[in-house]
Image (cartoon, rainbow, N blue to C red):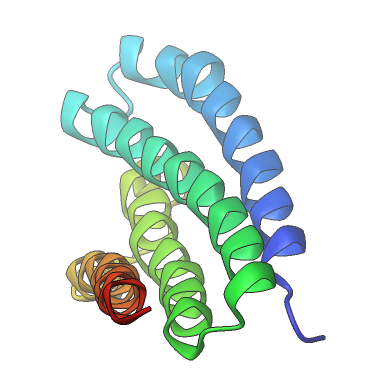
Amino acid sequence: MKNPFLILASLFGATGVTLGALGAHYLKGKFELGIINEFQYDAFDKATKYQLMHAIVLLFVFFFYQQTNAKLVKISGWLFVIGILFFSGSVYALSTQPISHINFSFFGPVTPLGGLLLIAGWVCLLIQAFRMHKNSIRS
């Protein structure tokens, strides 16, 4: 598959909305009962927001790559995909430990790595934008 970003954006969008609803309803009840704390509840919400935001960015990457076929755009897409999985995935696991009763503490270092991958995806897009600007000046 040459450009899987539309499928991945759709998947991350659908699961992001689903997990957002889970957080707003199920986890809110667990927070009110004191099973999870405010930090865990807020972290889950933040993971959902980052996932949904970057799902939309993957839509942009899909269309941008269709137009340019630029290697940096493709790299940025994969950085966003892995960044979403690492950042949001680890936060989901860590923030729901009291409910799952599974020790996900080994995911702790994965969260900042996911954030760095998301940043790297944005930097790749920025570099591509500068390259395109530089080429348009020459034309």
